[in-house]
Image (cartoon, rainbow, N blue to C red; front, side, top):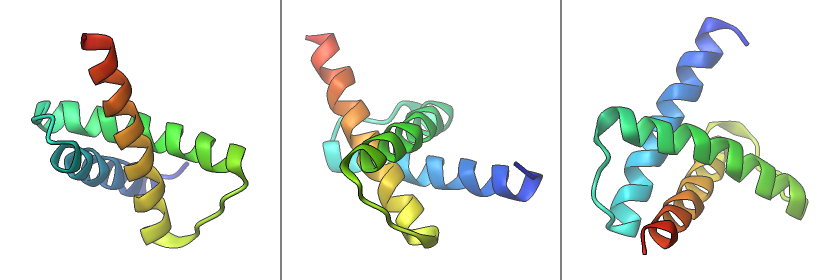
Amino acid sequence: MGLQSLVWFLLIGLAAGWLAGRIMKSGSYGVVGDMIVGVIGAFLGGWLFDLLGISIGGLLGSLVTALVGAIVLLYLLRMMRR
């Protein structure tokens, strides 16, 4: 993975983490926490989409995949807090 790909991956993760926090109304984990949630969500979303046979390409597809993964991750984190 080149530097440019890494930067895009982190920016998409940050955006997905921030959007997921707003959608789930869970409050923010801060910039770094949102990025971590988004990046882990990107991996989780990619795994889930692959498992279900869903393929979305492009920058918007990457954002959607990361967003879905981040929402699932936030849901799981909420369940663990209870």
